[in-house]
Image (tube, rainbow, N blue to C red; front, side):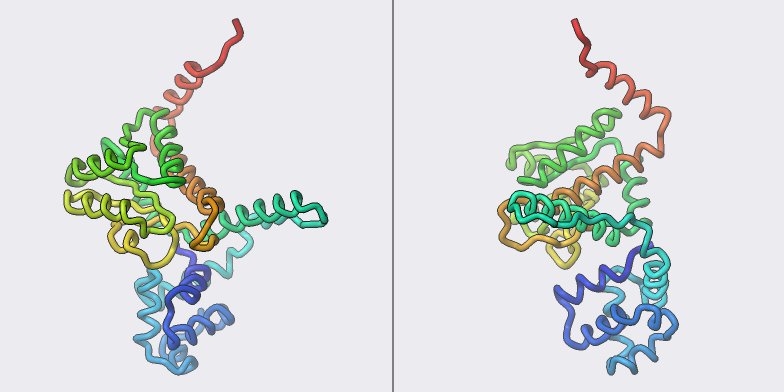
Length: 283
C-alpha cells in the first residue's frame, strides 16, 4: 500500500492550489480524525467541494478518498516501522559538523524514500523485469552511475542489460528498443532535455518505461508507465547529487533483491560462480 502523509506533504509544498492546501493542512494536522470522516464531512470542514478532495487523491496516486483514508490509517499504525537514527552534532569542529549534516541528510532521504514506496507498483515492476529478456538502462551524470550499479548487479545473475555512457548511443538505443521492451530511466529532476528525448523515442517505439525520479510533477513522470519515487531534498542548484543518489541506490538495491527472491536458487548459483571467478587468491 502507498504511504499517504509524506506524499501529501510534498504535494502541499510543490503544486497544491489554495483550496487544496486547506484540505491538506487539515489532513496533515489531524490524520486520526480524517480516517473517521466521510468525504462530505471533510469537504464541509475545509469549506471546499468533494470534487476538490477527489482531485487531491487522484493527483497523489489514490483512486479515491476511501483509498487515501486506508493509506493514512496505515501511516498512523506503522509510524515506527523504521529504526529512527540521527547523529547529534556536539562539536564545534566544522568538519565534524559537516559529516553529521551529510549523514543525517542521507538517513532522511532513505526514510522519505520508504514513505514514497508503492508496494503494489513495486511488485508489478519486478514482475515486468522478471518476464523480460533484456533491460534497457538510461541515465546521465550521477544517474548514469546509479544505472551502472544496477547493470553490474543484473550481470552477476546473467540478466542481460543495455547501458551506454555515451549520450548519442543512449539515443540510438532508445530508437532501437523493441515494442514491449523494458526501459528503466533514471533522472532525479525528470526534466533533463536529453532524457526526455530518449523517453519520447521509447514511447514512439512502444517500449515500457519505468522511471526512477523525484516525487512530483515532471515530464518524465507524465510519460512513464511505472514510477519509483525518491524524495526531493536538494535545492535545484546543487554542487553535486548526494542524498538523491543515496535514495536512488536504495531503489536499485530493492529492485535487485526482490528480483532475486523470484529465482533464488538459480540466481544464487550464478552469484557463487562469479564470486569464485572474482576471488583474489594469493600466489
